[in-house]
Image (cartoon, rainbow, N blue to C red):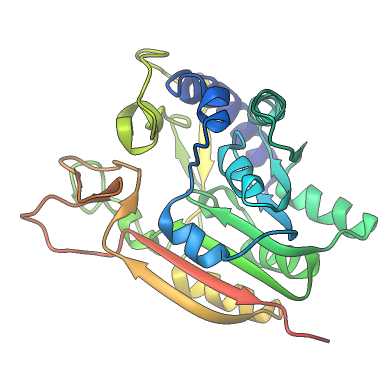
Length: 284
């Protein structure tokens, strides 16, 4: 585990989170009027969450956490970014949707929650989470340990095959890469994705954002993810791939094919840009 790189990422996310939320307008009003940031894929995988204890790992600024809480779940959101958790806590209060938020490195949270005896019906995480994890096997074990017997893990992520391309769709990065990849810092991808990530309309917000803090990303293939979860004792009962990415315009000329699903330009072959899986912890 590379905690010094996690700390660098925390600083980078703190800076980026301010820029991201500057483009989202009055989010409290959005939620008070019944808004939700969940896509159809998450809603289908989550199913009926009424009364369920849900742990949302790497919850960012809490918008998806509150969307799940509105469905009747008791939600705990965890994120490494101080700015994200402060924003999520404030948004919960201002929107009137109850949820608990805790700032923590996910690995520290696994240790502390295990010591407190916490267990959840559902562990959930989505979109751009795995690339910040320096130890995939410890992550998988942590997820499994915090699930109740019969509890479910629900996961949606951008496909690692898409991560081999640069913004112009040229092959650039290794799919198999055991070395952390240094980046210029977490970008203002919310501004770049425009309406894709702001369902109620994008506000101008911060312009020309340049992150002063570098970041470090880790590459994990689909096989590594599945193997890690199975070795941690979870049983995978669903795995799906999608030829689009929800909300995120990561590459040039991406187009909305409906429902804020962003696909490659029509002159390029369809490739997997996103995947999901659902797993459960067998009864003892």
